[in-house]
Length: 252
Image (cartoon, rainbow, N blue to C red; front, top):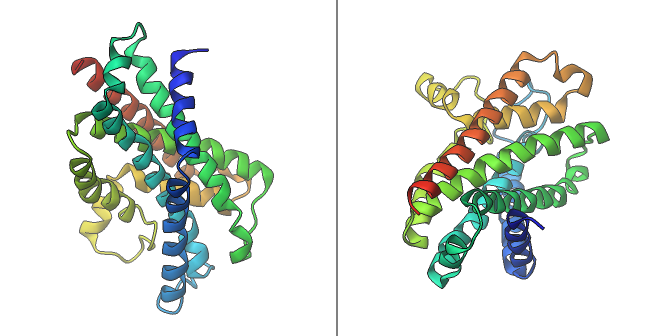
């Protein structure tokens, strides 16, 4: 068994053995979705989109779920360092790439598991998704999971304490999600806000997820917006992997 998979399996076992972590990572997005969906359903006019607010916000909350899952997965890097486990792994006869990929694989698999659980709520909004769309969605979410986990790895490796990691999460990660169009359509917003959303890679991840939900599989390859979203999400995920590798090689 490869060292990367051993480290990934350790992340998954740690996740399963912390039931409060499982519950909280699912409960927060769920309540966010229910309360916002109920409170804003009469305020937001989405007739031009052809759906109610709960249905519109659902992919955005799914993205939020992946963000929080990645945060919890990579914050353990700081805990491992404080306990001395990380130092033991670094001096072991394994490559630095195994450490990075072990964390990325573990974090992404945990994210996908939680996505699967959250997809069980689809009947609550009278929405359906075909099996092929579901497979495409999981593949796309894998890229998003790698992107978020890679970002988290980069920040966690450079953070001395959990509190400093949370501070960066509050001022960088969470605003990236808010500025992705997860909670409001981009049409009609201020021009400066549109600019910020257009340079935000998470915006394209959000657009790709929504397109998969509401398009037939045969239409995706003809959708230039989806192709662009896929390419940017792929480049973003690969870039976070590169930065994680560069950081661990530079600082060990």
